[in-house]
Image 1 (cartoon, one colour):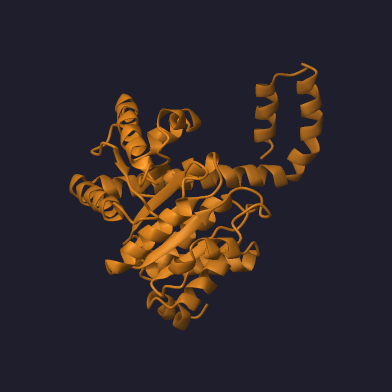
Image 2 (cartoon, rainbow, N blue to C red):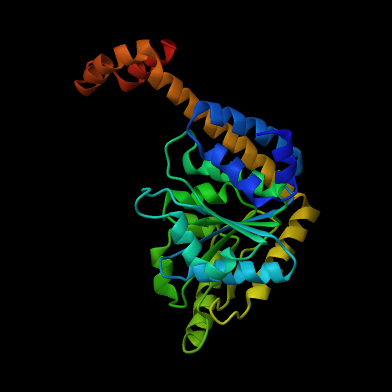
Length: 319
């Protein structure tokens, strides 16, 4: 990518951005090297957005919410990028067509950029690509980055580890819902937003709000922020402005407390350690001496001829 292209990217050119993301997603070593060079050049221009992770139980209306929220942000003069993290199979979900048709109106807007994640396969998997794509979007001038988890399970933890604010969308069904969502995910949440709070469901949503608030109060939260529970209707565009108001409140309070930069610094450190671990494992699995010795050691461990600890030490010492 030439310096000219980089200027185009920094000027917010969508083609230049898409091209840079394609390099980041490529599994070819020469593309990865090129991508890392670009990322180093854009680093000083990144970090100026607010990064929001969004997850939710199936059927909660995540796409409708993201579209309504994105369109509202554009009305407020913001540029919005939507990145979808789908760690499931490349066949099952996360196709570009799927994401574009799910958010038809938003995808037509010049101020919005929608990109699904590629399937797994490289170091760091989906999380790496999404983190790097986020930096490119920030350099291209997007003010709000919405990272949506498509799969359920591990992806929530990955996304929470790369965003400033983590939002869990819930249905107005109340207490039963709480059973379906893991306690760990509740602990990650900075806010629970009960969607579809309109018409007949409005009373249910208020009841659910009380139940969720009590449940959230039982969890220990150690930072400057007490997680909120809110209701909204993405379909009827009710309270979408209040959700943004809450995010801004979080943002300014985090700035005052210094929590914002601390959190990002911690996330970067954690990410470094995760990559070091993965690279070590990769190096280990590709080492000829290890490949030759491992089957014999596995057999001996299986038959209780040697302890797993002793076998592991022997493998590590081969490096």
